[in-house]
Image 1 (cartoon, rainbow, N blue to C red):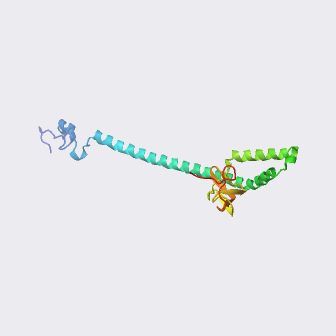
Image 2 (cartoon, helix red, strand yellow):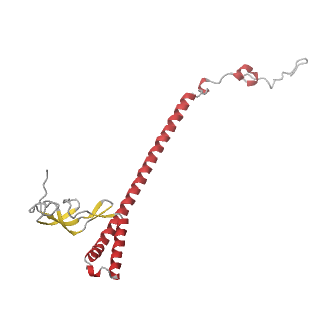
Image 3 (tube, rainbow, N blue to C red):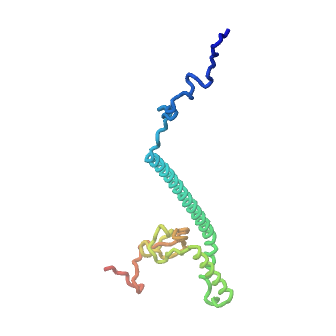
Length: 206
């Protein structure tokens, strides 16, 4: 029971033993613990890392560009080779027809040379040859030339200058500088000395 004069004790709701409201204001601005502090970034290291990354990307791009260039070159080479083989096959199939036409024109009798139909065949022969030339076809030089196994095919040997082509049995041709059909020839066996300019004297070498 309360005695007269005694005041009841009232607890202060604002008081507290460890409440932050009673803490030192300076503590509110204190640095965080060491383990929570962020280390400032080194701009030089970051720049170096970005430079290395850029160089890596550039090298990768260079390899990709080189691979693409090689692929493009290989495709173009294959396309060119396919076209060359197709042209060679076409020319090889056309040559027997041209051979027949060539022999027909060469064997025309002089008395028939002025006839219209003969002249027509001659014109066809010329157009045919121009077509072959436009495709890159050239005739192999053989008559009177030194025998060359790379472009001549010897089918017989007869009296004549040694190693010299004395007769062409079938003409040979190249396509783009490459032999597609060697010339079939008869080669001298050396049993007859080489004649001089007049055809009677052997040629003398000084």
